Each structure stands twice: as C-alpha cells, then as structure tokens.
Length: 412
Image 1 (cartoon, rainbow, N blue to C red):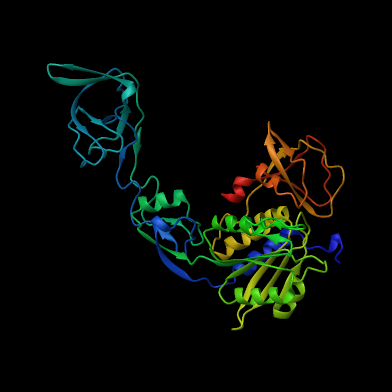
Image 2: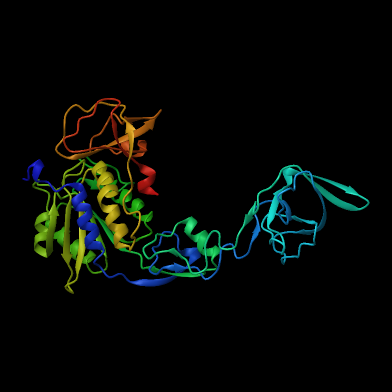
C-alpha cells in the first residue's frame, strides 16, 4: 500500500493525462452552427468580412461634419436614415437624423447623441440646436472595429458556446468543422448497487454514480455508448470491459479500485490491459486508476477507474477526469479552471498528506464548509457552490486566504 508521500500529486496526474490526450489523432466532421453547441473546432475560423461591415451609428442621434466650435450652433435636418438603408450623402451645413445601426452618411464623421440637442420646427423645416461640444468620431462604430477581415477569430481547439455561435453567425458562417463527439462507456461496480425504482433489500443502496456521471458527461456533449451496472465478479467485469473496448473511446468505471477483497479492477486490468497509475494524493478520491483496456483488435482504450463513494466520484471527475476528457475532445484552451483567494470561514488545524477539496459555500465574503465532508455523502455536492482547495501540509486559521474553485467554472 503506497504511503501518503508516494502518492502521485494531483497536478502531475492531470498534466500526464492531458499530454496523453494530445497525442491522440481525432476524427473530424462538419456541423451546422445551429447544432454546434458544446463541440470543439477542428479548424481555425478566419473572418472573411469586417465586423461591422460598414461605419455605423452606435446610438440614435444626428450625424454631422465635426467642427471645433459646434456648441450653441443650429443646423437644419436634411435627411433621416435608419438601419438597413443604403448610406446617404450629407448635404453641406446640415445634419442627418440617424438611428442606431444605420450607415454613417458620406461626408459625416461624428454622431451627436439626441440628449445633447434640442429640436424645433419652423416654417416646415426641422432644426437642431447643439448644447454639448462633441468629440471627433463620437458614437461611430467603424468598419472592422470588432473583427477585421482576415483576422483569426477562433483557433483550433476552441469549444463552441452560445457566444461563439452568435459570433460565427455574425461572420456569415453556416457550417464548421468540429471533432467527432467522444463515445464513452460508464460502468458502475458493486454487489450492493440497485437501480432507482427497485425496492431496496438489506445491504443494498441505490446506484447514484452512473446517473451522476451520465449527467456530467452530457454537459460535455459526448455520446454515452452504454451505462452498465456490474456485480463484484471479476469475470463479469472482464466481459463488460472487453465489450466496452469494442466501441468506446473512453471507459469510466466506479468502484472496485481500492484494495478490498471485492475490488477486482486492478487484477482484471492487468489481464486485459495495463495500469498507468493507481492512487493519487487527493481527498476525497485516493483510489483512482488510470489504465488501458486492449480490445480484440489490439486497440488500446483509455480507462479511468473512479472510487466507489459518490462524493469521491463527484470530486475526482470534476478535478481530474474533466480536463482529460476536454483535451480528448480536442479542446486546447480553458482546460483548467482558475482559483481565487477568499478568506476561510473555518479552521483546519491538522495538516493533510493529500490535497483536499472541501465542499463550501461563499457566504458574506467567506468560505463556509458543509458540515459533512464524508466521501460517501453526496448532499454537499448539491449544496456547495465551489471547493476550498487545501494543499498538502497546509493548516488553516479562520480568516486565512485559501484557494476557492467556483463550481460554475468547472461546470460551465
């Protein structure tokens, strides 16, 4: 049994997993931007147009030719222009009534906001009187101000979110080349597990690990090939793993990764694959396996064996597995969420030999831990809005600044 000091540090395992993922060649496919949410770009997006494509008004107002002494001057309104119309010509010594998004008239170089004028009509002619001296170029959005033609908008490896889809649409992009979704098998092990809807017998518990993982995976827009439940029988586990290796890109298991008599994952993996790493310095979640299953065709399929306790599954998936899967999907940016320093609303007087991820809420500027941090209790996962990250050997006094990892940064 490894000592605490011999356990692989969390960051080392994450870096090794990301390095491994980036060596794998990924398949690509075309996708409509209407269906591209959550996918990862397999080619850069280079703008073929300026955005905006023409100089336009940033607000409702009056377009004119700038002068250094416009204060208290009056001008007749010669025309009115609005969004969607062709650019007009500014007549000398007049202004054009202009609405937001309309093209700037030729000959105009400034838009004065309507709040800075008064308007009156005399003998059928509308005039404005200027009450505030504008600056040259005021309230004009120049062509290419947001994106210049020829600019790289998104590099390869960008995950497509709602903002990215809006931006792609603004460029006139209809289809994008993306990496094919990952195919993942989820396998929960344990004689004690039964599915929801079944009456519990003595010694049984409901399987929360599989629904939890499937829900988390759906946020990544992967394809769930299977979600299986396997008893603590090595031959049955071997059979299901070999089946998963025929049609999965990744296999995720829960349970069976520790050293108990009913923990068979390690021995089975040594028979049908190999183990890259076993156990890491994380709390909760120390018994975590990274290995491979060799398929009947000789292909190696990566496997991550998560612990059996549901809170450990929650923590290890978000901290370790999530950046690995993102990288396997081709994502190259924002793989790791950033922590911020926040005062602790708790004391931790005993240093730990593993990095600990306490489930906490940010309340009135301080981190308050859930009263139950047990690896078998899932309630704190729903309650928490983030993790307080306590490093190996760190002690905490109330008020100390500690690393806070917001949940929205992980799940977004």
